[in-house]
Length: 119
Image (cartoon, rainbow, N blue to C red):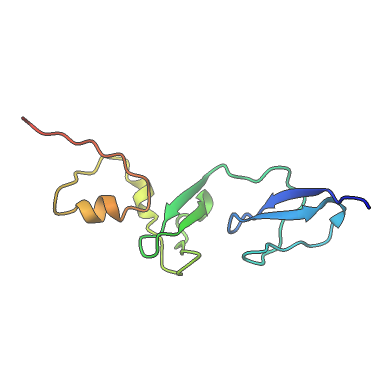
C-alpha cells in the first residue's frame, strides 16, 4: 500500500489551509471552507501585506489582503462590515473613560495602551 504525499495550500480568499494530494495534477482544487478555486502553483502562501482584523460584532478574526482594504471588507462569519479605516490612523488616539469601550474594547486591531497620570 502506497502512502499519498500531500502539500498544504492556503486559500488566498479566506486563509483556510487545504491538504492537496501531490498527484492531483493541474486540475482545479477548491477550498474546503469558501469553495473558491485554489492556485496550485503557489509554493508558499502570500501572507505579505495581509491584516488580521477582529469583527466588532461577533469577535471572529478575518484576514484582509492589503489591496482589498478600501473595498468594504466584510466579516466571513456574520457578514457585517469591518472597520478598516482604523488602519490608516497614523497618530495616537486619546482614550478617556467616555470612549474606552469604543476605542479599546471594540477595536478591530490589537491595542497598545499607555496609561499616564500626573501624580
